[in-house]
Image (cartoon, rainbow, N blue to C red; front, side, top):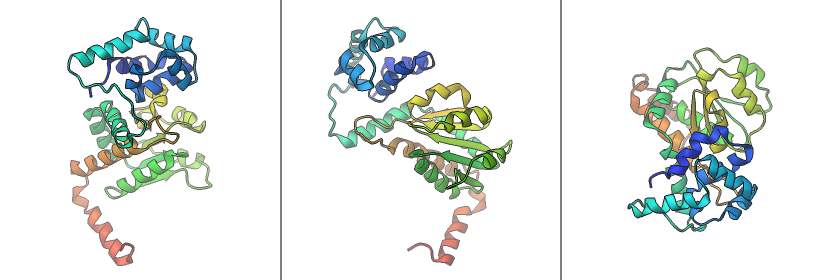
Length: 270
């Protein structure tokens, strides 16, 4: 499904939005078609803002009001573009697919190619993740370790970060995984680490850091259910790692064969 025009406008205006405006932006970026079914009052209630804030939000995007956005989407539908008019909270499979599609709609091929090159050329990869972001960072590390060496995960259990951050080399790449409800240290790390060495993977609320990182990958986690879904970030990790493998940069070192040999020697796997 083509990305609605107002979603593109949200991305362009995100830096200028107020904190409450960003709450509305985060919700509508992940659930763009809800705008057809929800009133201004309902959007305000869902995003814990006010009717005045929602109205002001649409004016900041360049629309006269909420109705103008709805009419724009309906006009797009009349031109033949498929637009879902119904939201089904029990359609879990399609909701997961929508999150993945929405994520990839905002990831350009050039973005993936640049990250693949950066990971391939870096002397070492440091992955950092806290709270619910930690499992994604851990999985990213495990995938990368199949392809190349010198990949580490932070923070280590029970350890501080100061010594590790001081140890980051000039030709090292740091990939920070930081989904919503981020601990305060994330902001401090972004300010501390060199922009040219920092890649951020996060949810839409991290768009405030767009100009403080070399690359920003926005993944949709969904808001239909109480707990977040991490299918979209796992999809991004999978594509990145498979692209690195397909690039041929590490094809000559037979790393995968060597690892499999050690698995056998240690009798680690069934």
